Amino acid sequence: RLPEHTSVHWHGLILPSGMDGVGGLSHPAIPPGKTFVYEFDLTKSGTFMYHPHADEMVQMAMGMMGLFIVHPRDPAFMPVDRDFAFLLAAYDIDPGTYIPRVAEMTNFNMWTWNSRIFPDIDPLVVNKGDRVRVRCGNLTMTNHPIHMHGYDFEVTCTDGGWVPKSARWPEVSIDIPVGAMRAYEFDAIHEGDWAIHCHKSHHTMNAMGHDLPTFIGTDKRRVTQMIRRQQPGYMPMGTAGMADMGEMSMELPDNTIPMMTGWGPFGPLEMGGMFSVVKVREGIAPDDYSDPGWYVNPPGTQAYEWTGDMPEFARADGPATQVTPKSHLKHDH
Ligand SMILES: [Cu+2]
Image (cartoon, rainbow, N blue to C red; front, side):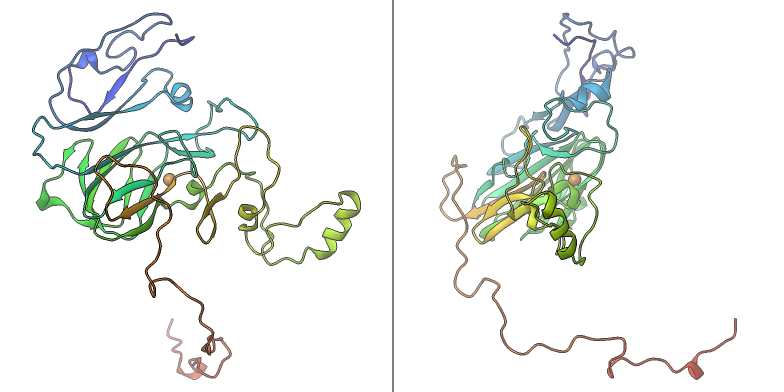
């Protein structure tokens, strides 16, 4: 039903050349209004992806893509208790508009997991002691270092196949290259609320004005008075950092959300985009994925304010800073 031709490429699957779905190469592109059949045997288990291979940039910019998960025929092969899957996709949607910009190559502003952004990505709810797998397939045009707090884990599968035990090494962040999938596994032995996010900080933010000047450290009091003569409600922003944008609720156009948002038990989270929380709790039933609420830190296990003496911080001209006397410097070059 598309107004233009398309095709479906089966990323990572082993299949006959004519079923590979590259429009014009594997078969004629599928014309508007027509239906084509792809037929092939699934020769291996794992996590694969599918997407058009015809006017790819436009059709993928508008979200035509998906995960293709093949479970092992033998249920005893690498069993897990919880199996999460994310397809990473990026969109460029100007605030207040509804159609993604399709000619975009680098400047995306919506970084999504399964086409959702924080705070609308569900938490990953896990029972303490579960064996957990997280699969991340990347069909954006940049890499995403996925970082999970509180654990170390091992990559157990790529879209090329399962990684044998002898070839795994521990990680806390795993880079998902462009056009690739990584699955990692861990034993959920640490209770808590653990952040999981892309480590590119602009990927844990939502749409913003990209020509935002940096005002950190500037004194805007005088200019604020002058602007308020014209616009009485004017609020100076960004002088301590950009966190005030997460705390303030500014009026936004329809179909967009704040750049930094979300609330935790202790205040604003100032996140967006590719961010969620792994919630590990005791006594969660095998089929229960409902949000257990915020983790209650046991007494004595939460960061607290220090009110005692603080050490002097080092200064270049302080007595503790030793400067090499000029006479000790060699001038042999
Ligand atoms: Cu990212």
